[in-house]
Length: 292
Image (cartoon, rainbow, N blue to C red):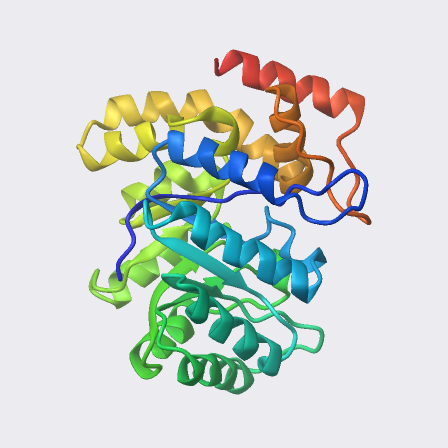
């Protein structure tokens, strides 16, 4: 499967009483993303606080997302586990529930060698037939994979077929495009690089922004693909400050705060994450108001 366009990331709402996952509210968030015309939905990424969920909660979110989306768009399930054994377990579960793609990142306590990372991906690939998005997110996962190494895995691991690049370095995307002769699809995971990344040949943009600003990211993507560079530049700079702010303020906390501002009470982030301060909330409210 080859994804293209805007890949929307839902947050994970928590029940105020039990602090468990609120699946009804998760359905509401998925509806918001679908109404924003996203081309795929990726559950259990950073915005979904996957690292803070129990195994049961992770499974609940994964299964509910696949069932609720019901084939309207492809569903990507994020997997970032310390052990290969647990990553395999989650990958097999994603296949069993009918997910379309897994987004796999190597999560590290010890510094992993390329040999260890390769073995991790290869083991997961051998455990599931699902396509694998190789996800490079050094700020969160503690592992930074070079374009050359990721392309080596794409060439050598049977189900590894696409790359999500979130290092924040646009040169990585240029290298992926150049070294693969444009044959390996790659996706932008950094909001503030959206304009450059899509112009550099990114197949899509992975973002939680549609939770708060509707189809404005899709409008940007469509403008670039249509060759309307002037419109794309205007759309990007309209969104730029907001796109940067929700990341630097803490993605899960800021998107949840933004949803509350817009009348959708989804609870706060799970501790040790904290909700936005009143000043930060006021800033976000202003940014959202400016974007309509």
